[in-house]
Image 1 (cartoon, rainbow over the protein chains, first blue to last red):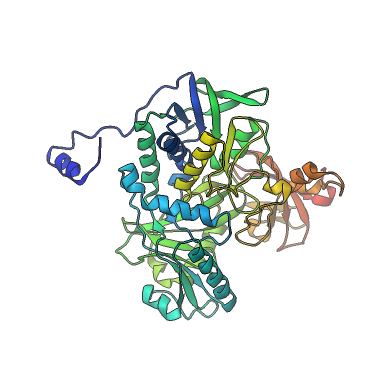
Image 2: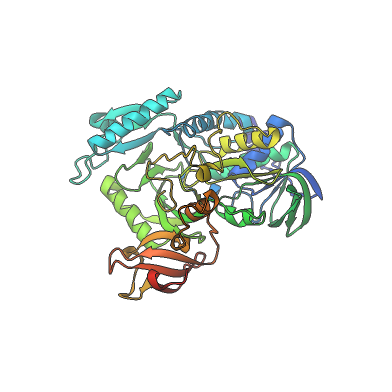
Length: 417
Length: 87
C-alpha cells in the first residue's frame, strides 16, 4: 500500500475501507541471519537499512513491549546538526541529510518541519563559544547564523530580553534544524523494514544471549530460542541489562529525562528555542501543545517518570526566558530512560564477542540520531567496517583514553553529562 | 525523594549532590593496571533495582553518604556515612 494525496482523497470518499495494517505480526522463526534486540527508533532504522542498503532481509527485530513504546515516543522531537567536535559533527550532519529525504524515502509522513533551532546566549563568553560552534557547523557543511540581540528579537519577540539576571545577548540560529513527529518516525521505519521482509516481533523479551567459543549463536527469548548469525543490541536505557547477558559491563548509567506538554494553544512559538542559562528547550507541536524539556534528574533511575525538583527547575527556566507561557496549563509529563555515557557521546561498535554488536550511549540526544544511527550500525553489522560518519563512537575510548568526544567540555565522567 | 542523613535526619533530595555508584569508594592502587582503572572510573553494573550510591550532603552537614536505593521505585532503604560503610 502506497500513500499519496490521491489515495487519501479516494479513501476519504469511499469510507476509509481500503487501509491495511502497516506491518505484519509474524511469529518468530527459529533462525535469522541478523537479530536486532530492541524495536525502538534506532533498532527499527537499523533493520530498515540492513534491508535497504545491504540486501539483508532475513532479519528479526525483537521488542519486549510494543514498537516505538520507549524513548522514540518519549522525547521532545528535536532534529538538529549543531555539534562542534569531530566525531559528532560528521555524524549528525549525516543524520540531518537523511532526515531531509526521509519522507520520500519511506513514503511516510514523519511531519519533518525544518522550522529552525535557535540557541540563545546570555554572556560575552557564551557568544564566543557559540561563534566557534557555528563556525564548526559551517565547516561541516551545515548552516549556522550568529544573530545579535536585534536579530533574535525579529525572530522571537516574545522573550524577556531584559531579564535582570540573564539578558538575551543573541543566538545561534540553525535554520535546517527543527522537529519531526516522533511516533511516525518509528512507524515509518517499521513499515519500511516490514515491506522488505524484516520480521517485527513484539512482546518478545530477550532473556539470554547464546555464545559459543567467543561467537554469538543466537538469543533466548520469552517466545523461544532464536538462532542468529549476528546480533545487535539497541536497547537504550536497558543496555546494561542486555549486555550483562553477554558477560559485558558497559560504561553506561541509566537516568530519567522528563518532558512536558501543555494544552493546545494557537500558534505562538514558530521555532525550537533553547535557553542558554538553564535547562529549557521548547517548540510547539502542530496540534498546538507547547512541548518542552530540561535536564536529566541527575541520579540513576529506571522509572519512566521523574521527580519534582527537575520539574520545578524546568518551569522556572521557562518562566525566566518567556514569561508569556506562565498561564499555559501543563497537560502531561513523562520520562524516558537515557543511556548516559561518561563523555556524553554514543557507542556504535563491535564487542569482544564475534558477531555481537552494540549501539547505545545516546544520552539525551537519541531522537535526532535515529536515521544515521541505524544507517551506520547497519553498515557496521553488514560489512564489519565503520561507516565513515561514525568512526569515532568506539567502545574502548574510555579504557584507552583515546578519542573521547566530550561535547560539553565537562570531563569524561559519569554524573557530569 | 527524601534521604535519611545519619547526622541531619531525613532531608529533601535537593540538599544532596549525586556522585554515582558506590564503586567510587573502592579505588584501585596506582599500578593496578588499565582494566582495574577502567572498571573503577567508567564501567558500571547500572542495576534496575537495589543499588548503593554515593551522595554528598552539600546543603547540609557536608558528609559523604552511602545510600541504598531502588532505581525503579526510587524507594530509599537507608543511608550511612561513607567513612563507616563497607566497601
